[in-house]
Image (cartoon, rainbow, N blue to C red; front, side, top):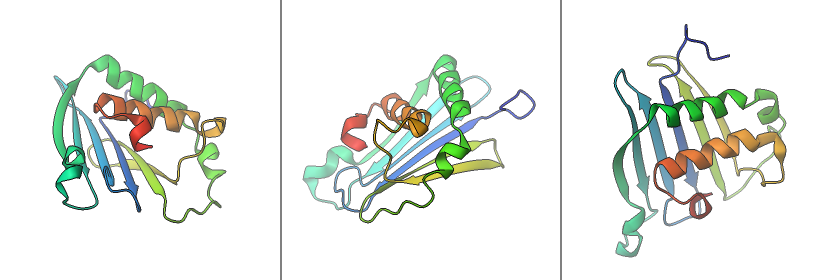
Length: 145
């Protein structure tokens, strides 16, 4: 699916939660350049109370080509039909995730409200990619998802 003729150089995870105070929004962008792969993390709490400062981040990390390739492998395993099974679900006051990937100009996005439980195998690759991106950004998936 993702051949050399159309290389993916960009992966983004956007997470938001309508009721959460710490980590209300988290954005992780991974950009593959010629000589490096860079991960950009931005997260914000819902308010400016100093007790939530730990979740106000703007950081940059370099990741290895192998880590980027592992993300691509998981991305390739995500099945659009599995995501489509959840189109009829509605969540109120919950969280949503969007995974966007592609090149410089053209991108594809998958958005899900309220990630499905671990036992739902139809989204295991989507869930796994979300968790791996959070770990690469030095965040705890159990605290975010």
